[in-house]
Amino acid sequence: MLLELFNEGEKFYATNVEEKCLFVLALCLQYSLPMNILVLNCGSSTIKFQLIATDLNAIEQNTDRRLARGVIERIGGEAVLTLQVEGQTVQRATALLHDIRAATDYIIRWACSEASGLTEIQSVTDIQAVGHRVVHGGERFIQSALITDEVLRGIEDCIDLAPLHNPANIKGILAVRELLGAGLPQVAVFDTAFHQTLPEHAYLYALPYQLYRRHRIRRYGFHGTSHRYIAYRYRHLRNLSREDVNIITLHLGNGCSAAAIKGGNSIDTSMGMTPLEGLMMGTRSGDLDPSIVDFVSLKEGLSAREVESLLNKQSGLLGISGLTHDMRDLLDEAHENKDRRALLAIQIFCYRVRKYLGAYLAAMNGADAIVFAGGIGENSAEIRAQICAGLECFGLQLSAERNAEIAYLREGLISTDDSRLAAYVIPTDEELLIARDTVRCVQLSNPA
Ligand code: ADP
Image 1: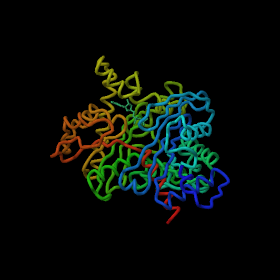
Image 2: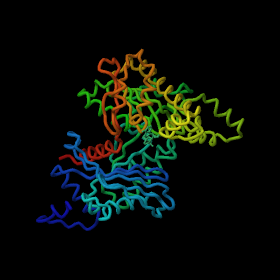
Image 3: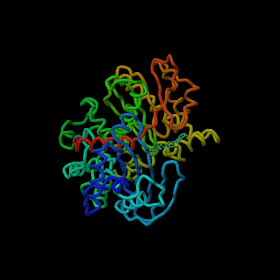
Image 4: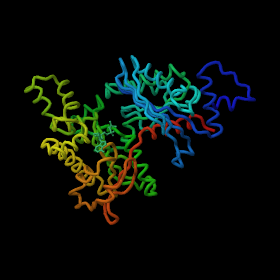
């Protein structure tokens, strides 16, 4: 569309898709037009994506627009697709998609097709850049980065630390290079980057120091994009400067983590070298005595790898309840059938979050607020109330009315006006932050 509008009257001889894309990108930068950013979150057999229109003005005024979103699951065979243009009905489909490249190709073709109903995108030239969620950036990436060959090598170097995740992220980057051309800007936004401000005393494990030196064994933390987004929204809600943000953020979804944010920086977080440590999660155990690994291995005749899989996939809410990893189903079970182990799983979950809150309040010498996010944190007033019960000693007074009334996808205060420690719900939006970081990185690399 833009191409037709702007190349009239100009001499423009693009010979391939990449040149056309770059021409339109240059126009966007020159005339401060919103850019359409494709956000990709590539897993081993799943891709989540969003298309978001944004630019520096939209970021400033919080007027970015989500155009479409979708998930492709079971990549490798007959994949299951859920696609939705904003404001329209969900489209479901299946397709034979052998790998991440084929799935990425499908997403781009769908977005450009008339059948999608997406009027803003009519050809690939209407996609100006791509932002990728990259799980592990090690100690090297302290912020989002425009992907060059050197950055790509850096992401490859972190494969050791995230063998299940980084390879899929790299496949997504290479697929876009192949499909849209190497010149189209791509940006990597790292889950670990926000936590690179952790001080040494918080990120080191009490292991022989040589293990850190030799293998970089340390706490990295994850969900960084989510914690950063929540802190950013809190700052705007309260009209504070970054240095005045002293909060504990709770990302409670299938994966769960807490972060202590002091002076706007993450100073501690519950996930560790991998996302297994910390809070109890849907299927992950969270913290446990490391000796249990060997003990279970001996008693159950499992290899170390099998025990690790048990801790990642069969523990947490699922392990305790024996029913489900899904908090909503667990709450239903607890209410309808008073299932003892469902109740117990919920109790352990909330107790452990509360323990982390206490620890971080001590680590930070007090905080101004705790903020709930993630599928559980945003949607379950009951879990929020159960977590907050017993924190009155820290000055937290939850408002039962505000907590019950805060609706789906709404942000706001849920504590009373005179609560010394405030509590908020702020729906997280990692994709939006990835799109915004992508725009910022592209702008930085193309100064006016
Ligand atoms: P992910 O971490 O995969 O992004 P989400 O952030 O969507 O996952 O969180 C999923 C979790 O949120 C599930 O345990 C789900 O049951 C829970 N959840 C969603 N809605 C509710 C609700 N209304 N009440 C309680 N739990 C909910």
